[in-house]
Length: 222
Image 1 (cartoon, helix red, strand yellow):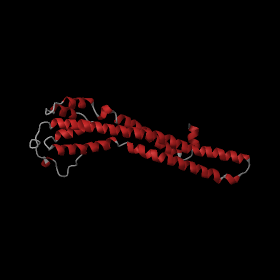
Image 2 (tube, one colour):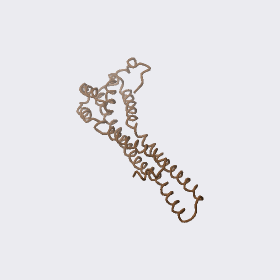
Image 3 (cartoon, rainbow, N blue to C red):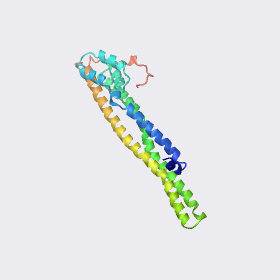
Image 4 (cartoon, rainbow, N blue to C red):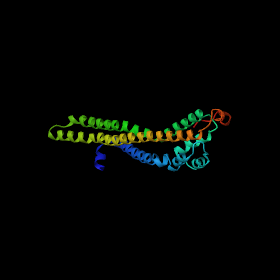
């Protein structure tokens, strides 16, 4: 392996950096996108247990002590129950989009590596071929043919290394993107169920007026 890396030339170093970044990103994504970390079972169970129109005080205490994505969205929804239902839903959706961006934070790295790793490998290969053919006229005979063949095989090491990084990166990117999509749909379903239960039985007048005065004009939505 060391010999393979050494023969690849200078461009093997940025490819090595790409491989380290890829492995690190995959490990962090595995830890971050665990379902029990994004959608804690205790919060799901409490929302399922909640009676339509019942008190959500116990659920509020649970989400206040939790830092998961579902907890943050649920906390936002519960804190604005005096708002009209449509505005609360809109506010929760805004928070959900912010959480989605948070979950996708590492995926852009995998997407970039998938694109640039083969290109860096190709540049390394072309650079090696230029060096091989530039010295083609310095000698003649059978020995020269062998040297050219050896030089080409060494130059192709960069392409092999680049593709070996890009393929796992693409697989990981596709997998994690789909997982984030599934998790976001589940969160949307759970929070929609919560809001429906909390507003159950309320008439339009009982939903209250939007408490715009409680939110500073300069305060961000997320």
